[in-house]
Image 1: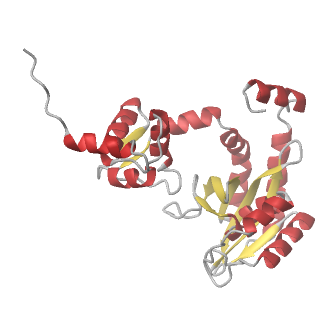
Image 2: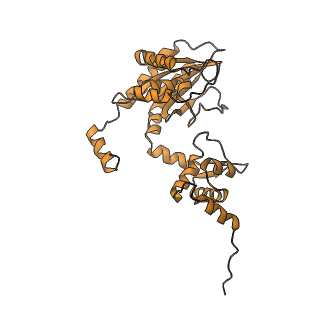
Image 3: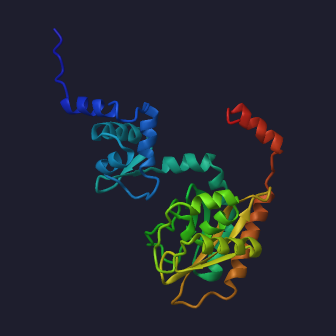
Length: 286
């Protein structure tokens, strides 16, 4: 005669919580994606409780999903028992994302700029209302801030972010500037009129300098990196400390680096726009 297994009351409560009328109903896949998305903004190792809070999942569900994703190879455990994304995630991303292919094209030119100046240089794309760093080469490898690969900051506080916003549509700019803009220092520009002026100058001159927006003692210079069709979706930047002499000819070096990366991008075969439209329609994207 089979004996019934004892009921795990906490698991039942958590399942009821995850499927309660007032709680957003999500598929199993959506819950896994929420778990992975918990690592998106900061990238540091997380405890189960931190993952559960960021993913809006019960602790029991988080524990089960984290175990399954780790078994698959998508998560690692550090020495303190915290979870972090594994190398497998990076391998999948590097095999499939356009952004990391751009990074590979740009990296030799970023290395050259870094060696010439000895300061931090980065390559950035836009991710919603943030700038996201595809690469960051720093003078000090122990840096732990947001200016690192995968790190994010609001568009208006970084030179690369403002460059990307400057080359977006006017409507896109207005929508971003209508949101509450965080002030990091007394030098952070948050008024729409002064940000519009900065972006208008950037479109005319092709380069942008921003001082003290994130930290009072630092400044940055950035330039756009257009694709083969002339659309600006990438920017290259350099960050310097005011206490040190600025490398000679830094704006020209940044601008030259951006142009070399743009040229490397344009040398890749470009699909006919009609082919792109057909592929999108076949994928159900309209």
